[in-house]
Image 1 (cartoon, rainbow, N blue to C red):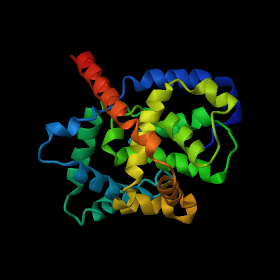
Image 2: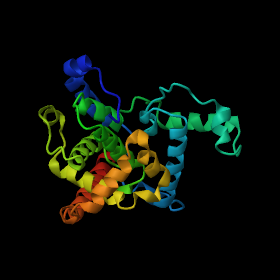
Image 3: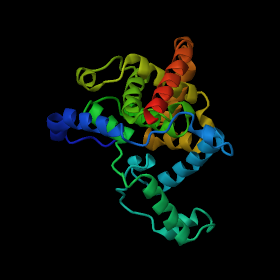
Image 4: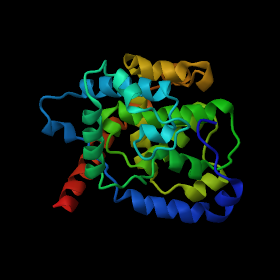
Length: 263
């Protein structure tokens, strides 16, 4: 599978309670608005994608846990020392610069490092649902698209995970929800279809972010990115195209409601 399996005893006894807790916790997390880049005219979404593509290479090189990609916790087998990290900047910064940047990020996060990532939801929603080996890799590939597709930036971790599971099952021809999945999915079909639409739209040009595509094209991930791209190219697109207008309106309403809540 593409994620760490949850202990079977924990999943059976505490899975539902834990899911309820992290769903509540994610509401207090730092989920940006979809149009937050509008406040930074000197930056573009293309720069955002290029930066994440480079960061992903560093993440993959150091074999960091997948959760670290979502900046939620540091549980690594080897934590790179400052000197190694600075080597990736070609010594453009000093160790003091690195410490100041780290302190600034922690202050902005208010030291909340327990953010429930999409990976956490992926594990606790799926549990020990035995499926094709490619299924888990496709699901993790889909959730990591959030770092590259602007329409996914403001998607909550739980919705991202539920959509990745549903779309991965569809791509792998595992139609519908299994019994235990139906009990753990809370988002509406419309929300899931809208999010899947954004993932599929991104898949049409995902090779542009070569490091991201190539990571999941490797044998380790069973060519999940190529598998998804082939499915997108060979599948009828009309049903997804019909949802595009509705999805844009739904996202606009969601962002508007967030602004009202913030005020």
